[in-house]
Length: 146
Image (cartoon, rainbow, N blue to C red; front, side, top):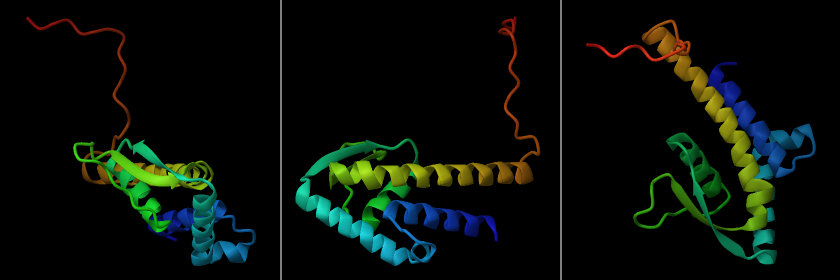
């Protein structure tokens, strides 16, 4: 299995875990798992009125992942004029955010960041320079030239 396939498999397993899948067969049925989560969201919306959630995401990849995850659950992310691109707004029940959306996002984002880090180091090592270690730490400042 290549790196992309491993990442996709890991993301599917994380999704199934948060969708409440009980058996291995259910974990493989991604659509059924997604429908269960959507049903949970619909039920929580009836019981728990939506709040306006403001999320500031640190980088483009996290933002894209959060947007895609929200849209997959039928949510409509937005931002107000003059808000930064790193800001995402949602109208969503607090319980859904706490129980499903945010925990799932954190796990998926952790897997995605690890994957992107590995790919970045590999590309730099192969195309720029083999030594991708951190810069050396020295004891004090160098004297000023002159």
